[in-house]
Length: 352
Length: 198
Image 1 (tube, rainbow over the protein chains, first blue to last red):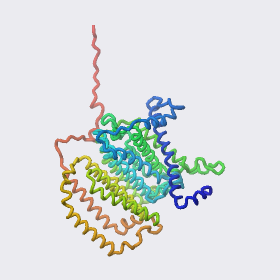
Image 2: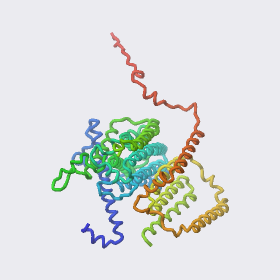
Image 3: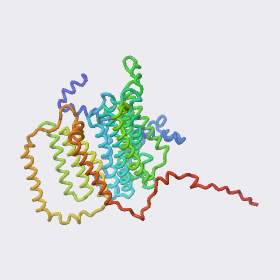
Image 4: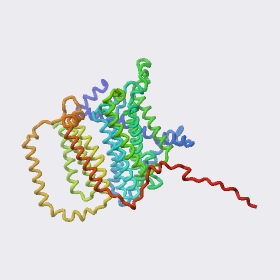
């Protein structure tokens, strides 16, 4: 950081604020680009799964399609429904985007690359993902529309129920890792693919992934949107940029769930085989531990999200609730007790 | 004034303002949202005391779960709060007396214990806040903590048992039977011979 030293002395105490802002921008801008290309990937991948080609008109291979969509949304008129609560109507999209962005503060991208190394990182992410539901509820209520309100209620009930299963899955992770700090959790998985937590925590891993689908209102749990029943759910009255912000928040949450799954169960930035760290070219290991692996794991989890969407029909609402309360919560509880019991036996090393 | 003190005053001001709006606003949904802002500001103040576990737990439990259900109910109930608040002003004398009493009691506690001068209780050495709290709850005070938990559990089960009633006219499906269904029971393929039309 020698190059930045004069800037640092010039800014004085404001340096910390400026430097943190720079770091936030360095995380947020690629994230927004990732969202843009995730929507593109979604349309392409589902297209190929359904033997279509998908978007291919804008730019080479259709690669500029996301920007065309953004431009279209930016120029659309925002219609405020009559009888809507204006302030809350506009605050709601921001309330859903804010937590989706803020949660990235504690995600460790590599060994040292993390915005904030707080000790309760896992709890922080859980807390913020539970705050995101306000955007949805308020959007439904402030729109003054039956469909929007029904969608909001469905979504809120679903998110609150699946949060419990998700929280229990995280309890399992913190039990084996002995820490709430995400960097420490990844460090605990060192030693190759067999040491990653998805093996000792296989049921929790599956529960976390499926609960993640439900938390982000993705197929097959997208009852909050359910086109065939309630048009588009909570954001039916939103158009233009306000809708785009909801869209952004949903996809950002998907990427966040993918990052959390990769960090907690799939070894984060660690390479799947330790010997990859020894394959060096001029002192640099291109396939060693690093952001490449985290990105690859996140891409895989996101692919699974899209894959599930293209494969399964939508759940019925009572089935969603049954799955959350009567299947996932008992499964996670039993597995937590099992981990606790196993830690007292001679098999403890299998559960770290 | 250090940066920390300034932050403390900013969050305290927001907290007090939001708390005032909770009781003065007319719309119940707005009141619930102001309360959410209160919780957030309180969590921020706790963070300033390095009590990060408590702060995050406050957001997680109260903002993330309790207030969501609260909003849920308030939005669905459609209570006309204007009629409820018709005699709002007539309670002012009683409210003032109670308020002043509470204020005096709190002031007595703060002054009597000298808590105002004591240094912030946090930043407990090198160990993390979460670990320390865990030790307190699950090692030092494990029996009181577990007993409290069991009492809460009993209360929850009792509340459910009291509130639940079986309605004969409500329709529900048995998932076990649904899973057991085989296509052969539902679909009957019939072989209809083609009629010979002359």
